[in-house]
Amino acid sequence: MSSKGNELNHLAIIMDGNGRWAKKRHKPRFIGHREGMDNVERITLAADKLGIKVLTLYAFSTENWARPKEEVAYLMNLPVRFFDKYMPTLMENNVKVNIMGYLDELPEKTYRIVQRAMSETANNTGLILNFAFNYGSRREITSAMRELGGMIEAGLLTSEKITEEMISNHLMTSNFGPYRDPDLLIRTSGEQRISNFLLWQLAYSELAFSDKNWPDFDKNDLTKFVEDYKHRNRRFGKVDESDS
Ligand code: FPP
Image 1 (spheres, rainbow, N blue to C red):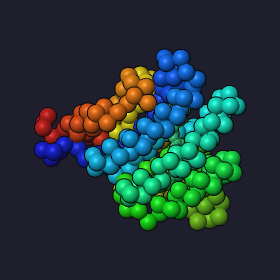
Image 2 (image 1 turned 180 degrees about the horizontal axis):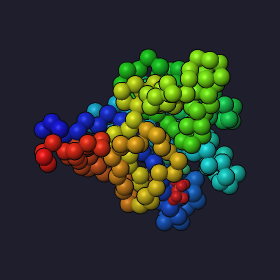
Image 3 (image 1 turned 45 degrees about the vertical axis):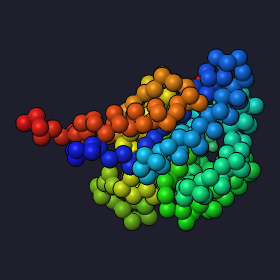
C-alpha cells in the first residue's frame, strides 16, 4: 500500500432507501425515487472529482418487476427523466454512460433512451457511469455458463479449459477491463445485504454500509467512505507482509 492508500477505481453502490426517505416525509414513494434520481447526478459528479473511473449503480433489479405496477412504471421512466434533465451536464463532464442488464425486456421508450445515452456518450473518455438496470447477478452468471456451454457443444472449448478469467470475460462488466471488479461496494439505508448484485465481481471488494437513505447520501458521506477505504488493509486472501 502506498502512502496515499488504496486506489479506488471502481465504486459500486446499492442505492437503497428511497421509499423510506419519502415515508418519513409523508410523501408517496415515487417522490423518493425522484429525489434519488437527482442524487445520482450529484454523486456522479462527486465521484468524478474523487478520481473514480467506474461508478456502478444498482438502479433496477430483475426482482423489482414484482413491485406495484405504478411503481414499476415510474422506475422505468426514470432513465427518460434522468437523461432528459442531465445529458448536457454528463457531456460537459465527459461522462461515458453504460447500462448493463437485460435491456431487451425494457419498455420501448426506456430501451430507446438508454441506447441513445450510450451512443451519445460513446466517445467520452471520463468517468464511466454504469447503471445496472433490469440486472440480476445469478441470471448474469447463468447466461455466462450457457455461453461457455454453447462453446463446448460447438467444439470450441473443453470443460477443463474453463478459467476464472474466461468467466469474468462473459459477464456484463467485462468491457471495463482492469476495472471490471468493484474495489468498494457501498449500500445505503442501513441494510446489509448484497441482493443479487455482482456476486462474482464482489469476491474481494471492500464493503461499506451507510445508515442514510439514498436521497440523503451526499458528497461528504462519499468522501468519508472513500477516505476510509483508502486506509483499509486489502489482502486478497494473502498474508499481510507487515505482520510477518
Ligand atoms: C431502492 O429504494 C431504490 C430503487 C429500487 C430504485 C433506485 C433508483 C434510483 C435511485 C434512481 C435511478 C436513476 C436512474 C437514472 C435509473 P427502495 O424503493 O427499495 O426503498 P425502501 O427500501 O426504503 O422502500
